[in-house]
Amino acid sequence: MIHRLKRSIFIAMTVIVVCFIGTPVLAAEWQIVGPRALGMGGANVAVANDATASYWNPGAFGFFGGSKEDYYGKRGWSSTVAGAGVGAQLHNNFGDTISKVTGIDFDGIDNDNITADKVSDFIGLLDAIEDFRGQNDKFATVTANSRFGIQSGHFGLGGQVLLDVSATPRFDFNNLGPDNAVAFSIADFTDPANLGCPACSTANTSGVTTLTGAQVNDIDAQLAVLGWDATQRNGFINAIDNGLATAGQTVPADIVDQAVSAATLANSAVGGGPLSQNTSKLRFIGIALFEVPLTYGRAFSENLSIGGNLKYMKARIYDRTIDILNQDFGDALDDALDNYEEDSNFGLDLGALYRVGDAFRFGLAGRNLNSPKFGKFKEEAQLRTGFAYQPNGVLTFAADFDLTKNDASVGSNLKSQNIAAGLEVDLVFLQLRGGAYKNLAENGIGLVYTAGIGVNLWLVNLDIGAAMSKDSTNLDGNDIPEEARAEFALSMLF
Image 1 (cartoon, one colour):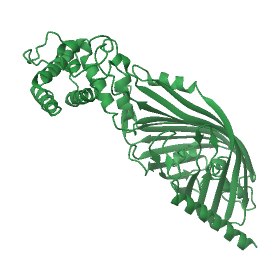
Image 2 (cartoon, helix red, strand yellow):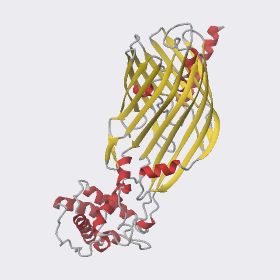
Image 3 (cartoon, one colour):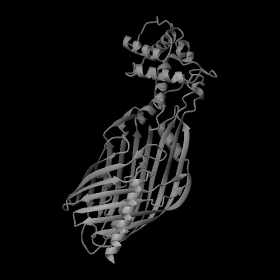
Image 4 (cartoon, one colour):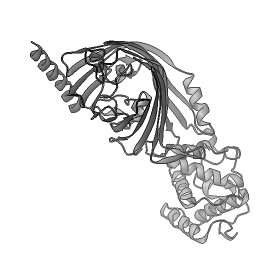
């Protein structure tokens, strides 16, 4: 009887895996919850052996409190007294580009003709906006979580909040004129009088004082390809040169690219309105889920355990659009989080854990398998598998892999399918962790390194974990990682 039951369970789990792998399923990214998991690169499906297993793999609950005093059986009860984490991702150089736009002082740009000392700002603005044209993969994501929970034997009860909000720009590429005319033409960009340089000759006789001869020649050649005549090219170059000199600015290293990008955008925007009528927006869209899972697990043998969560879920749904020009990113995010709608539903999670002896463990976990809906959002099912190797009581090696291809963030077009690996060294009173993870579905953010530490104070554990991407970007003039996360937790283990 037991043999037939085990066989039926394995067949059912196999069918689930095959269905998920063969069907394009969309789901929010599997968040890394807990400092132990983060420190080990996000590989925890076959590792979690306390109250956090309700999130990572409820199948572990079937082994808790058993007669065998091993990795799981010794855990009579445990509690996450307090835990929280936060993370941010800047996809495809979003931070550097959005900083160019939001960091510009628009006084003197969107009023009448552009003053000479604002010409370089104006050219930089158009260059930054042009950088977004035709690209839907530039966005920022903010994630956060907080949790508490208790595990007693095969049962668990807890609460957690999972936040996922993305910021995506929607640029107006038409209303970019430098004056308050109803519509504008190339003359608005090429006549020096309209770019704060009425004294400059369109014949380029004023002399180059900031741009080098090579830069002038490069800009001139590329403007000729755009179809600008000599008078237009000279006027545009002189206005840039005079604007830089008037503002006392150092010539940007990428001034040629800036100038040509601005000219390209101006070409396509002919017939539009002035910059003062520009409707560029930054859309904040996301969801915050408050989950209350009731967990139960059952071991069908010494090797196989299956568990699940039935959870109440309450959602806050964010969808806020704000003006992007001359807007501080942090203020915009605060404003977006103050506006939301609410909805509630129920969710179902399942997990299975199989172990071979005391050294090898294999796990499979599925979250939101019933695809609960909240307003216009649908939390599609997620499936993740994991492996752990523990040759002794000191070392643990682990790896996880997303079987579903998820959304990198709510409302984004990018996908997330992470592979994670990590290790832990348990020195009784001190645990040292390290690892890394990588999104195999996209190349916008490369390898992310993780590290963590745990301190065991008899029955109380204090854990912290952090993650940082190998590559960096710029935000508000600061060089920061493209992705960063931090987690902490205070736990009690018996």
